[in-house]
Image (tube, rainbow, N blue to C red; front, side, top):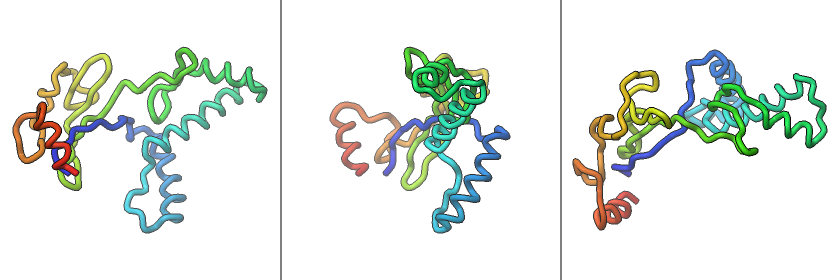
Length: 163
């Protein structure tokens, strides 16, 4: 597959708590599935970790484990988890505000940059230079080596030629 632009949830993998989880995850997962090439925790593992951490924080604050009180305490939670900010609005977890933009090229992908909700596109998540246009991220490899994004009938043809 070539020429697909996609987004991935972004999380900081340089934090010490991420390294701690990653080491434990590698030990468990690597032993259980030695044939697997990748032993790093992905976004779903981080979200599960944050869910358990959220309940642990609430229980540690003295909340008893009765249903309604536990739920209300969880909904007041606000902290920076491994998967991003853990905060609830109208009884729902706030959506992610940072994404990594990737360009799929054959069996691999190239990291183009990042998109944040309030700043737009940037080459680096910490970079002060942001732009509302994805063109600022540089060259994208489109289907069949085209220099521009497929449009109209070409877009449909590009979709089916990628399969």
